[in-house]
Length: 271
Image 1 (cartoon, rainbow, N blue to C red):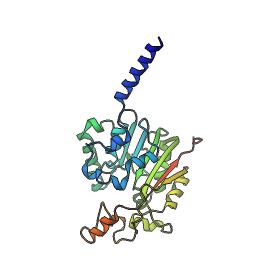
Image 2: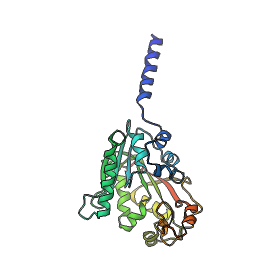
Image 3: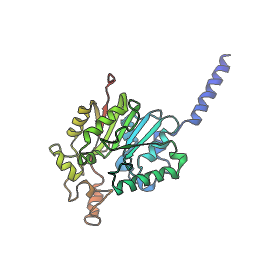
Image 4: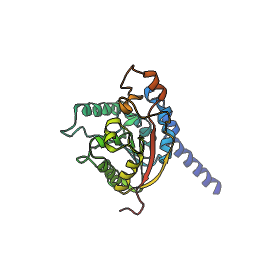
């Protein structure tokens, strides 16, 4: 009887392993990822970054403003079998949405539709405070992620509303992961509108005002070669290279921006 029970448990375990989704490293190594995206792994460190934020394949994860889908190509297959993945795009449905926003969101949706096996379970929401703030049902998310977006919200004057929306979406004990271009500590908010860099102190103040506790930072996306004093702000550097061929080799040698990688937690006692 004992041997039969062990055999049944082994078969059940093997069956579960056969249907489980890819590991995080396997999701990053997926050959279906866009080659131009893969080329940026050395700057964006997806395995280390997501591991620092504590991601697990069973989680409900929300990515804010996924853009062209760089992280979608990793998160969608990783979460497909056991978790949930919400992609909170810019609010293209709003009358105020620009043509650029509409085109970008349409292109993202086309990307998802072109590969239903990979992206068929992605759940789309919209995010643009104050009119679109429910990025997932309230209190359901384990992890909310945002990559290099805070400076855009500063430009829109809704950065605190953004952090409050993320707090509302998370379960008590849930995590907010923020990656953002790091400004010198004395830079002011208005300068962030111009150069795309934000101080760590300001992001931590926003998170604290929304109700979060600070849970630590990681140096994984630091770049000490970034001097942060360029003619076109952070967009002077790769991948944008706004100056095109002007000093191109110099900026390519610097690499992508110096980025802070910060983790915040919604208190477990939160209601």
